[in-house]
Amino acid sequence: MYSWISLDTPAALAPALTPNARALRGALGRYATGVCLVTTVGAGGKREGMTINSFASVSLNPPLVLWSIGSEARSADVFLGAGRFNLSVLGAAHKELALHFARPAPDKFERFAADIVAGRNGLPRVRGALAAYECSTYSCHAEGDHSVLIGRVEHFEVEDGEPLLFHAGKLGTLADLLPAPA
Image (cartoon, rainbow, N blue to C red; front, side, top):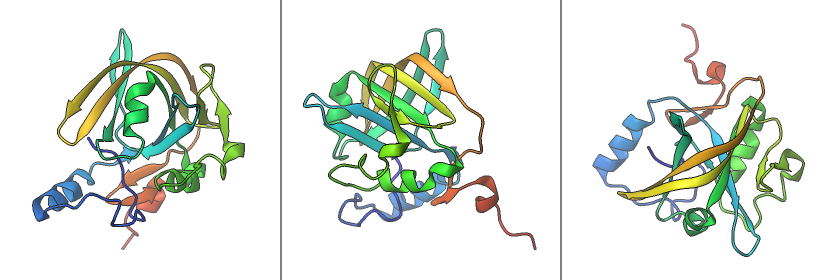
């Protein structure tokens, strides 16, 4: 699993990839995933958020989920030290929000203030997300060039809607990502 880097990410911010790593990344991208926004608040009160596709369920008892963050991500230290985070599973209507949070910005939340609400735990989450999970950090594992954060789900909410998907370097709905009929 890996954190999603937008195709729009400036090359200076993306890690340099060897030809084999680039090929592996392309192969991993053949696995279609959902898209999430993960958020937290740092010790100084600054909200942090990033678009990811590395979300997965781990266990129902206890209720555990995981996601991963690159060691070089600007907000890695904040997420690793916060002790809690929220995950919002994004729907088709959240494409611009997903693209926005995939890029660095001084205050990523300002532009989408109307789309962000406080969860029960006080951390930001996305209004109208297909699912929202409020988590405490259960464990963290440094693995290769990423850290895997496992969160214990303290509260969750679910809504109906069309999912936002990521496949082969593209973001969209299932209809957007399917090849055109011949």
